[in-house]
Image (cartoon, rainbow, N blue to C red; front, top):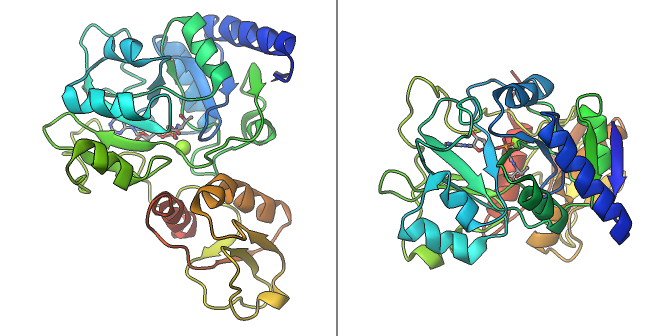
Length: 328
Ligand code: TXA
Ligand code: MG
């Protein structure tokens, strides 16, 4: 496998060409997005999609997001009503995934959509990845490039650590600016549902729709026994994670937020401050690196200071709750 840097125009061109060649050959590519790095493959090639599930060790009933370069490309694979189009126009390219009815004529493999009659579509904002999508000309299925249940990668080196053996190429455009995955909104049965909080705050989506997002999961069918992405333990570091900590226990590390320090912070095994200024955008960008860094130091427990759950905080708290959930 090769890590492709993208600092100079020549490097970018070589990286884009290498990614398109690898995707065309049915191979896996580590692709940067503004949220997290993805593990990409040709969404129309069932064998390539199967290789994603194998590399991640992911249950094959968990559907993948198809990445496309723009709204017209998305409309070739999914049915967009006025609300879906309004959200796409407001937030694409950007950290929003829309789950809509899949067009019967879409060549996206059934394995990518896990046999559902809906499809998750997204236009990512990373300029290099969008150029890859434009030149490749087919949708790219890409879950986050971590082994199933582990912390999502926000840097090319994280992808190498997680899945280095499985990928042909990793395209390195630096640390991801948003740092938590896309917000997933389902718009296929007359309701607008929030399936996963993420990089676009709920409030911003509701402002465009002019209505509140429903929180209950969509009706499930037998092909999809799990609510989307909702294995309760997820994003799990090796260390035990404890939320809303009013104090730091002996031996624990601390994930801090803002200037306040819980009792016992002086004795923390390590401190990672998500945002000294208490800024939720900065905290989201740092979240997964904090979990990874503290894991790399070998800490056995992590106390997490309280984090407000409005705006981007909803996604941060969601990921931390999963990181803290009992492990299977
Ligand atoms: O920011 C992101 O969304 C990143 C980057 C790489 O684009 N991708 C990502 O993919 O987070 P993944 O596979 O880790 O999470 C995708 C989530 C899963 O929880 C899956 O269940 C849900 O999207 N999903 C995909 N298609 C769906 C569908 N048709 N119906 C319901 N949920 C769907
Ligand atoms: Mg993931």
